[in-house]
Image (tube, rainbow, N blue to C red; front, top):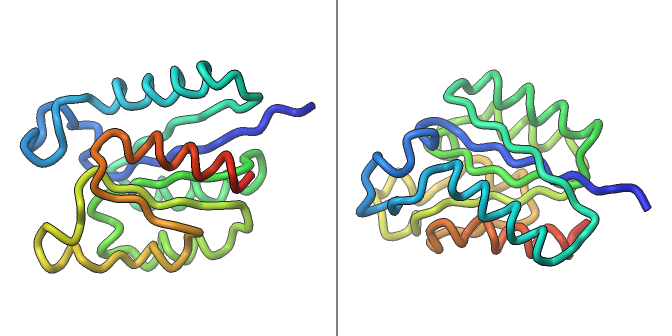
Length: 147
């Protein structure tokens, strides 16, 4: 049986987790969160690999989305601030036909009004927000069902 690959994409400023507004985002670093995903999948003993990509550049995120259709079984994206501004990322998500899940650490609906709308939500199968680092693990569980 071929291994399935879940591509994770983390957007702008997520590389600053652990230092950036810990009262909102928590104290775990992005590497800590990624390690928890790997550990979670290892404990489930599934035939699934993960690839992690983080960028503060919208164009690099679009490129990664486009490339994911070639070698990934599913995509999990935390678009960060680009979620609320990027039609380009939405368009890229709409061009690929693999399962996609949008995630956010914080509950967007308890935040500033401009965060209540995500452009990229229209391009994914589902959205998970407000569970802190567990948003990533919940997305993995959802993706396992989709792929």
